[in-house]
Structure formats: C-alpha cells, structure tokens
Length: 109
Image 1 (cartoon, rainbow, N blue to C red):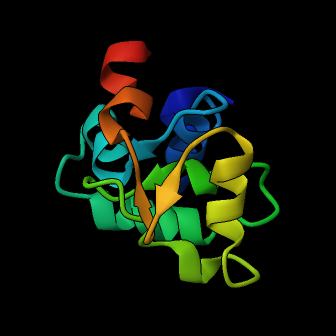
Image 2 (cartoon, rainbow, N blue to C red; image 1 turned 30 degrees about the vertical axis):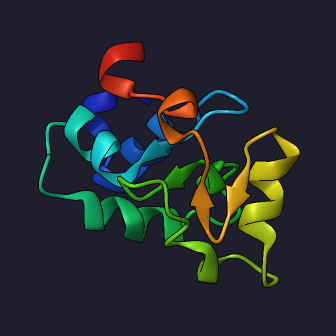
C-alpha cells in the first residue's frame, strides 16, 4: 500500500513495526515523524487499537519512559515483561537508562 493511501493509524503502525528489538520510542516521537507533532495522544489511541496487527505496541511509551499504556495489555505486567524480555530494565513502570534505548524515527528512518 502506498504511504499516501494509509490513514493515520496505519501510518503509526508502519512506524511502530520498525522499532528495533530492545529499543523504545515515544508517542510524541512517532507523531513528530509523521508531521503531526501535536497528535501524540492519537498515536496512543492507535497503539491501543493495534491488537492483532503484529505491532510491537509495548515498545511505545511516554516521553519520560513511563509505561503509561500498560493497562491496555492483558495481564498485570505484560508490557513490562515484554520489554524486559528484550533486555530493557523497568523499575516502577519507568524504563531505566531511557536515553540509551530510545529510538527516534525522525533520525533513524
């Protein structure tokens, strides 16, 4: 599908699918990359609706590295468990060494 024919959520999913294993990005970084800097909340809505779309939504967190979307995952700590299985350390819903694992699509894509 050509990028210009994708809706906003589909564009979000295409970016999220490119987040490397063991890295994370933020809702705002995806929104900025898509030219919609004030739409980080819409990116969050897209992540919430990504179930069954093979999107690594667990790799998208808020700008401070907090797991603000964890309530949308089945199980109490599934988002944290998925991140930890990729080598990302999480303490009290906060990614540790956030800067070192942060992936910025505007720089990487």
